[in-house]
Length: 159
Image (cartoon, rainbow, N blue to C red; front, side):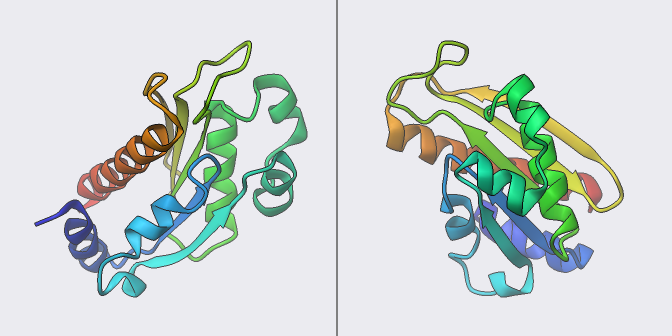
């Protein structure tokens, strides 16, 4: 059974819906989650918030958080996850923001990706993964795969 099939089974068991908030992957996670039949039973919606303005407007990310920590930070990933939870009917949200490349910034290297997870009961977590300078498409693909694993892990914790 694939990870996506496991997600389908677990969301059915829990009666949960999932929402995503994506920056660097620009919808790749949403696309992956909806690639299997039956995904309409668990997938609510996706927010593609590539720009900082979109993060502010659609997910209520604070401008002060963006200024203080940068768009690629666990703090922003947490606010994105909370914002997507508040603006959906989801029980679980996953957010992602990162630097796919080419190149990084003076503060963060290429391949740095931050993930946020929020659950309706108030549980919030974040993590940062460094995929390295493996090329834009590879960073985005590896980040998508990692996000699917994080969703599955969180569902397993609550099943």
